[in-house]
Image 1: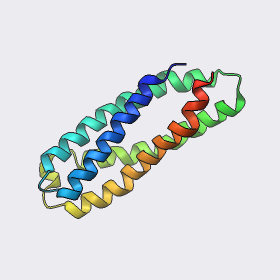
Image 2 (image 1 turned 135 degrees about the horizontal axis):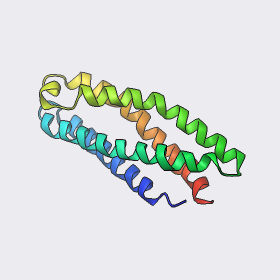
Image 3 (image 1 turned 90 degrees about the vertical axis):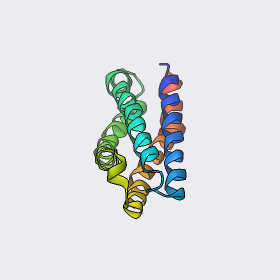
Image 4 (image 1 turned 45 degrees about the vertical axis):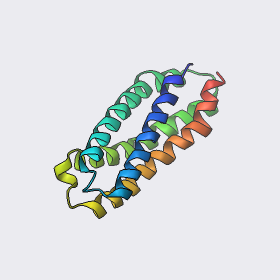
Length: 136
């Protein structure tokens, strides 16, 4: 199975997380518009990515003969459910500049918590899961 597009989406998401770090470091209120736009843009990429996983990747992996890979796939799929809920709350909370103004520390705390989970999850997929999928 070709997962190049999914890997590219991971790169896009990681780039956006890094942009958010820079904006946050330079001042959340100062960069409220840029942060809100980045959150909205990142959310779009994440939605497309999750849809591709749910519609194509996971159903494909349910049918492979490799039991270890099927189990790994199921684990990644279940684990993602909790992360998605947290990310959706985060994105709704911080998707407009007006919500960010004067909320520098609250945004930083929330971003550190939620985006760290998203980032760590993608790194595990990139290093543990995707290489196994590509071996098929």
